[in-house]
Length: 97
Image 1 (tube, rainbow, N blue to C red):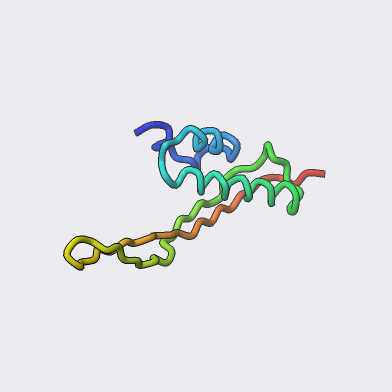
Image 2: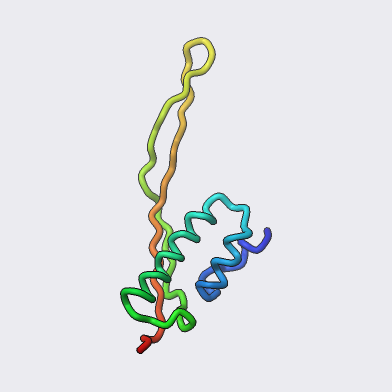
């Protein structure tokens, strides 16, 4: 199972980034980008302390699927489904000065 099987929600955001950096799962890079952006927004916009941040909720919902086709032998086609998702991360922590 590896490190990715550990629940990311129970970790601090900085620890979750370290775990996701070494994960081999396909969605680990996307999740890491969203977590970095959430930390940046909390620190720069909301003026929160980075060390006090914790995950309040992480939601992954199914997004739209792009349907494409690939030609095959004898004039046939096979479908390709390019799936996407919606990620929502909410952080909580105490305000800095």
